Amino acid sequence: MKWTRVAAVADVPEDGTLFVRVDGTPICLYNVEGEICATHDTCTHGQASLAEGFIVDGKHIECPLHQGLFDIRTGRAVSAPCVVDVAVYRVKVEGDDVLVETAE
Image (tube, rainbow, N blue to C red):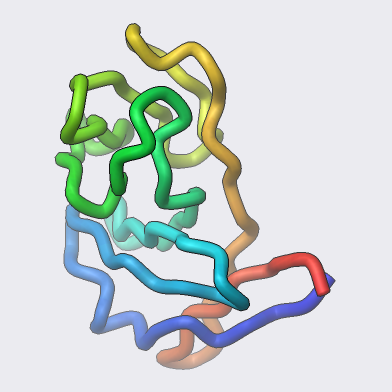
């Protein structure tokens, strides 16, 4: 596994999303109450970009295509039509840098 710098903390909007790509993998970053989280960017149901979705209740990302919900911290699909969880990535913040752990 390796850690890759993907953004500055200030690049991830409060209660918003930021699309990044790490070694070809689309990843969505979230700033939820000051905690940076990361999931795969592609909805497991409709292949839409979660970075274009909406944060609901401060802890779920709503797919912009069919409004299914995923838990931002765990990736768990919590609302139909989504039934397959989305991948999550470990994140660490070093100074102003946001790093995501990915496979080498």
